[in-house]
Length: 129
Image (cartoon, rainbow, N blue to C red; front, side, top):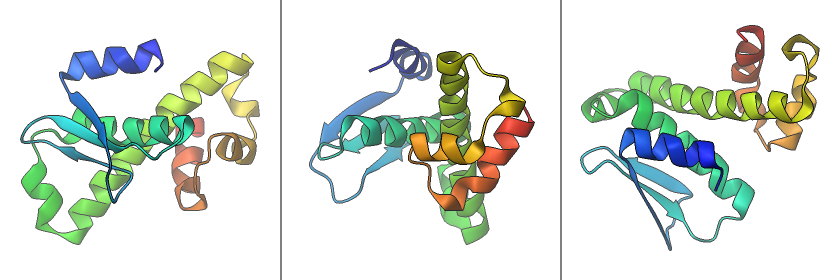
């Protein structure tokens, strides 16, 4: 696991547990723990972990809001996806030593297996860099 991700885990005080799950992963704020499915490959594991770290970083004390309405759930999932995409974009720029404005967002999405549904988040992250 990348040292920077380890730093985020340590800073948030979150515990990461890997096991046989029916979903890729989830965050349990009551115990500040992330559960990741052991069947994921390394790249999938990292993306799911980053998404769940987004929940831990942004929504640790908002578990009830997540369950309150579909609008709040969508907003919180958006925030976790934005956290994950921002991290991946920063790493992408470091690896390619590229100007953020010259990045082909579709290439970035493809290289990081980011689904089309998150295209607007990718564009926002790039424009806001």
